[in-house]
Image 1 (cartoon, one colour):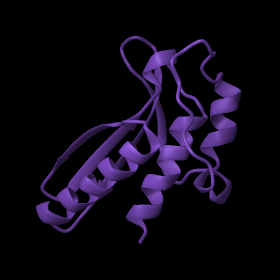
Image 2: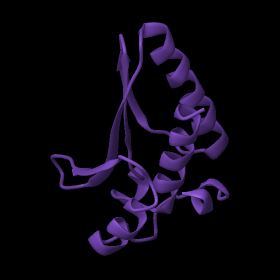
Image 3: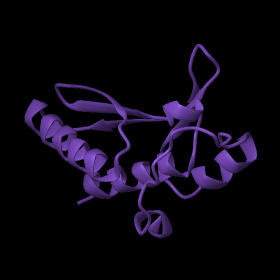
Length: 114
């Protein structure tokens, strides 16, 4: 994970291929506890649910995720409520996963573990 933490998300406007399943598995080993799922359109995304003691802590975490997302220029889908936050990450421009998704996942894990 530490090598991902040193990187910055690169702007992606498309024009590159999403990771294939072998590349996804290689990168998935670098992040902790993120599931690789497919949506209705068969597009891969990363998903992880974080558990908190109350609503305030969930909201505080989501706000920090928002700050990191803005810094990286890469924005996840977030659901949260009392005691939880669920994050989904994909690169919409290429309809799949790229290194950016794993960089953001590693940085989200880092703020959760602080």
